[in-house]
Amino acid sequence: MLFNSFPFLLFAVVVLLGIVIIKSRDYQYLFLLLASYLFYYYSSGSLFVLVIYITLLNFYCAKGIFYASSQKISKIYFIGSIVGSLFILAFFKYTNFALKTVNFIGEWFGYPPDFSL
Image (tube, rainbow, N blue to C red; front, top):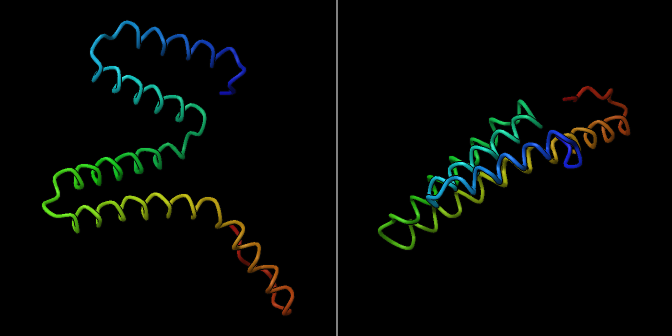
């Protein structure tokens, strides 16, 4: 769904009307979360599972930070949240680059490139 398309305009109007109609701030947050999930699912399909994973990871790490009994435990949750999120980002952003680099170096040394996604 492109931002300059009619389906996006319709989606945006429905979401804004939903925010205006819903009076409770907690339900507005839930509505926005579900609307953003729907938007991402509509635009990316199979990668939707990653958004759910990252949301749950960060939600439970934030709960762990909030209920931690010491600052050391809250730092562990904080670092876990950052590492988990950055791992997903790095994997999907740089895997293809790393495989192309390995194939290029393999060709340079005379080995046939056989790594691919």
